[in-house]
Amino acid sequence: MQPPDSLWWSTLDGPVVPREPLTSHLDVDLAIVGGGFTGLWTAREALRRDPGLRIVVLEKEVCGFGASGRNGGWASAYYPQEWSTVEAEVGQDDTNHLRHTLERAVAELGAATRNDGIDAHFAHGGTLTFAHSELQAERLRDEVDERHQRGELDVAWLDEAAARERGATPGLRGAVFTPHCARLHPARLVRGLADVVERLGARVAENTAVTRIVAGDGRRRPLVVTAGATVHATYVVRATEGYTPTLPGERRSLAPLYSLMIATEPQSPAFWNEVGFANYETFADGRHLIIYGQRTADDRIAFGGRGAPYHFGSTVEPRFDHSSKVFGLLETTLLELFPSLSGSISHRWGGPLAMPRDLSPSVRVDYRTGLASVGGYTGDGVVLSRVAATALADLITRPDEETEFTRLPFVQRPQRRWEFEPLRWLGINSGLSAAAWADHHERRSGTTSRASQWLDRIMS
Image 1 (cartoon, rainbow, N blue to C red):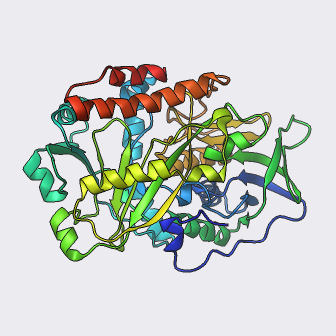
Image 2 (image 1 turned 45 degrees about the horizontal axis):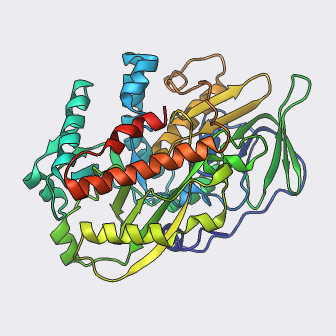
């Protein structure tokens, strides 16, 4: 089964043939629940450290079925929390270490794909965040000033003329440029990773639904129960991201938010000569409700955004992958940005991402129970998943050694649980509504809305 209508899955080199499901009991060193970026990078990094490890990756559908095969294809150094929040919690040195690790990780991900022979259409062109109003320009210039004060001197404010040399949109007032992002084809990456992990010696079982994870207690090892078999392991890793609430006892661990995308038909050379993006820069703008886009290797625009509601009780269902209202808003916004687009929208798709209560991802290993968990990227997981998986591989294979990854501030950090319903439904959807209203107010009046002042408070 593949995500319906996803551009990424429809442009793979061939059909996805599921691997054999698990049908008999296994005893392994490491059982990984979830065959997305996090689970596969964890297997890869653990085997690079100890090739003798017995590892199985258990995936309910096919590897990359979730966010790893549906996302916007931004390999960025973005972190879900504000840097000021991180610094207030852990100090300047640890914050700088995290930021520099993520910045290096963008190029390192590209190098890893090349070394593994994965053609993921990786293009390290940076990101443009456009300002389409004076209010957006003011916010973005202030952001650049703050980032320069933190030492991010390679982030630049481009005036209108300089911004248009890279990417041209109507009403452009300028843009922020950061070099710490690459464009890629996420489904090619995740399917290639699954092949790499198998070559390294891991078992990858698809169409294998995990129904329960049982903690160890010192006398017995943890147990994974699937629809057709069981697995005993020294460590069991939960790497299920937006699908985490579907597991028993995990409904309040992470909130599944839906992000939806559309893609155009391939555009002509004349179009790209007009609008730019010659270096395959990814792009967004300074509105409150997040949008994101990229120029694909076959000259389409893949474009997405938030705005779909959070569903009561952290419910995750396939029908939520589509919303005609959100798709319509995305198409309208895309045409506003690029009025000369030709052809029709060729693909529409979506899926859940995982948002932690405090917006901080986490990597945790409980050596007493043998249970580990990793995730909570709030949509910034393409690079962050590899960094988190590397930290987890170090924790498992080098439990008595501190590494540059295990000392990252989100590693072995307690994770705050979400409130009971209806509080989280009210809080999350209030935040989404406030962002949409703030953008509407700014477009209509040219002044800052009070709603924009409430956004940070809603999640505190």
